[in-house]
Length: 168
Length: 118
Image (tube, rainbow over all chains, first blue to last red; front, top):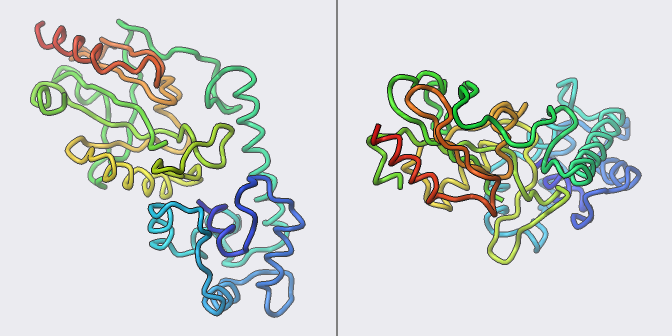
């Protein structure tokens, strides 16, 4: 979401996931009011407010509403501001750009090896646990924010049906 | 199925990483389909999961969010979508094929009936 938010505010071409680094740097520099090479939160907020940026027309209404509910600076800084200083240095921007490029590289690798969605860190495993084997345990956070759920806590209590998936 | 077996079986939707994020190698979306950028943080993933839950009217089913190390997805090789039934004894009772082509709720229902009959 951070990259999409950046596209929205820095007027980048959102159709291409691989925005050139120079374009990214140029866009950020235009927000850098005092020209010190570092983008501060207040510089971003002042400029974003002044230009009253509207979302590109190709965003679905759902994505627009979703993004409208987010603080743009917080969203972008969460991904870019690695040292949590409240500003974005050009080094952080370069690192962010590299991470994005690496991300698409991982997808390419996954597509080539047929391991759908596998990232480099994932073990080579094609099919998951077999019928009859002990179910791997996990502890996950529920969406409703209540207590963490441990799969093995249902052992001896009741069967558990797991529906894995995502929105897309 | 949730309504039919919800008393006997604990259902969980496990929200894992996006299958067709707009910035992925196989983006899908538009024409009424959601356009989602791959979440970079748990906070973002929860945001997308929440929209998904509301849009697909999954509300009665409790949803768990996989962590950003994709622990559950890696352990169950779940991506992009997959069904499992874990028996009362903690063993895998049903292991669905990889979705979307081998995603079979009918098979899951069969397994639940078998499990409940024991």
